[in-house]
Image 1 (tube, rainbow, N blue to C red):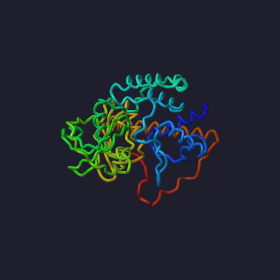
Image 2 (cartoon, rainbow, N blue to C red):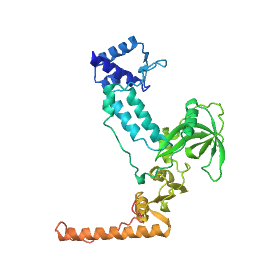
Image 3 (cartoon, rainbow, N blue to C red):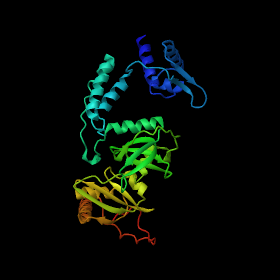
Image 4 (spheres, rainbow, N blue to C red):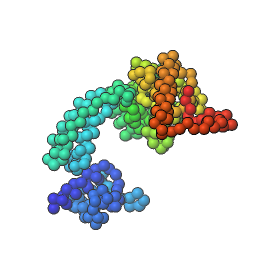
Length: 353
C-alpha cells in the first residue's frame, strides 16, 4: 500500500508540470505497466483530482485546469534538483541569492521528512569564474513587468538605451532569454516590422497599454537561437583590464553566437565582422580571438598585435623543441622534402594571421 501511495504521489507530481503525456510515457517514467498507470489515474480521480483524457494526435492525459495540487508534492529526485538549483542559481537578478536561500528553507520545511532528508546533504558553494563575463544583476521588478506582459500578450511601451540615442519603442513581447548571465527580450516591433533581441537592463517599461497582440512565429523557431545569432542585441563591451578588436573573416551572426559575454559584434560585410572583446591579459585576449579559427585583420590596439606575435613565437618554439625531441628519441626520422604547394591559389580554410 505504501508503494502504491508513493507512486500515485509521483504520478501527481509528473502531471504538475502541465504537460500532456501518453499512458506509455507515464509508464516509462514510473517504471510500471500501462494497466498500473491507468489504475493510478483512476485512483487520483477518486481522490478528486481532475485528470483529463485528450484524444487525437498529441493526446494523452493531463491535469485539469481547475485542479489544485497539494502543497509541495516532490519525489526524491525533484527534491535533490530543487536543493541544487536554488544553491547554484546564477546571479542574474538583484537579491536573488538571498531570495533563493529563503526559498530553499521554506521548501525544506514544507517537504515530507523523506524528501527533506534527501536535500540536507546538498550544501553547495558557487564560486565565480571570471571567464564567464557576467553582467551586473538587474532589478527583478523589470522582469516581473515584462514577464507579465508576455504572459498576458500585452503590447508594451519602453524607453530603450541600447541604440545611439535613447528612444521610445512599442513592442510585442514574446520571450525572455537568459544567455551568458544576461537577460534578453525577444520582441516584434510593429512600427518597423522587424524582430528585435534586446538587453532587458537597457529597457525602462512605461505605463501598461492594456492592448493585446497575437503571437507570431519567432525566427529560427526558438527564442534562444534567435538571441544567440543576433549581433545587434544591445550589448556593450565589458570593462576589462585589456580590451581590443579585430576584423574576423566570418559572418556577424556566426561570431555573435560564439562570442563571449561582454563582447560586441558589428557587421562589416556578409562574410566579415568586427569583434570587440576584453580579457584579464593581452595574451588571454589574443587566445580568445584565435578560437574563431578564421583570418583576422585590422587588429587593435598595438598591445594585442604584440601579444599575437608573442604567442606565435612561443608556439613555433614549442613545436620546434617537440620535433627535435621526437627525432632524438627515434620516434621519427627526417622525411622527404615537403610536397609542392597546390595550384589552387585560395588560402587554406580557417587560417589565422
